[in-house]
Image 1 (cartoon, rainbow, N blue to C red):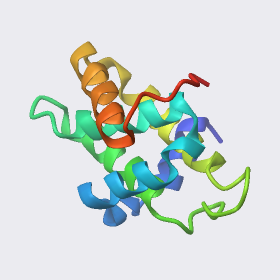
Image 2: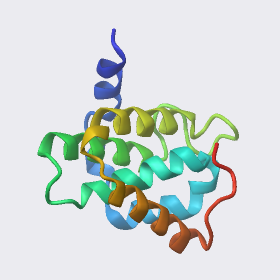
Image 3: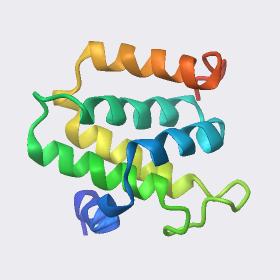
Image 4: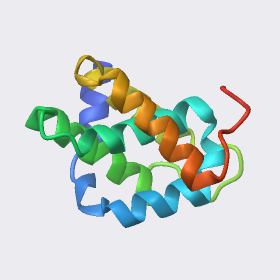
Length: 127
């Protein structure tokens, strides 16, 4: 079973949990628990999803991954200490890897700015 197959199965149907409001709420509530790289990856997917130039297939991957991130009772419940966001991190990073060639530097910068605006400052940890 390839990594792509696992990601596809994990995000299947998760797009129904996605909304901008839910993403921004989850980002504010759990963003620090993800670590900076995963938070930036999730926020980059959020920003990229809004691009009219993003291919539809990539948008479906992003919607599934962000829906998975938002849903609190996925493979590992998000409220569990230490392990709760591990699966979310995997899904977000795997989705970003699949769509990375469509991500622009401007999207990454906009994600940085959104993190700063929503969380008050850029997290100091980049792990």
